[in-house]
Image 1 (tube, rainbow, N blue to C red):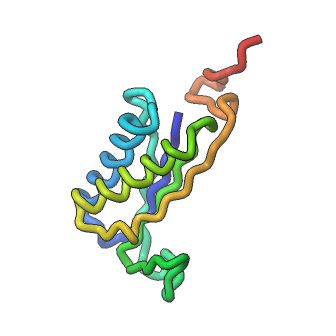
Image 2 (tube, one colour):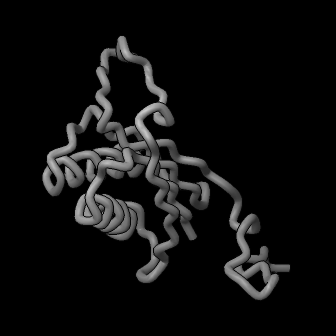
Image 3 (cartoon, rainbow, N blue to C red):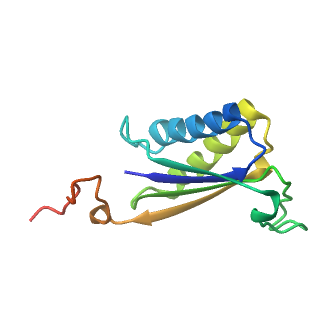
Amino acid sequence: MPVVRIDLSRSATRQVVQAISDTIYQAMTDVANVPANDKFQIVTLHDPDELIYPIDGYLGTSYSPSIVFIQVTWNAGRSIEVKKAFYAAVADGINRKTGIRKEDVFINLVDVSRENWSFGNGEMQYAPAE
């Protein structure tokens, strides 16, 4: 049920993009109990002037041109502990697989109700029970 948007520099190689994609999916299934094969992702590569971040840092974190913006829209209901574990798994995995600094892994979670999804055919597959 999640849809993931990944925005990063156009200079990223195909291998880096694939590693980021795989890491996020792995964290979703291992940590956040997302079903197998539920992998919907949109990757957008940007020119340097299209990735805007605070040059002086924010909340004690500094950023570089290698910043990766990740937005995950998924069903509401996960605990704060699960979300924290998800953030850590994604940042650690991306760092380990690509060398991108953990500081440059920016993640935003959007919690939505189950009825806000259609996986095709104009149907509400997660319709509330009547």
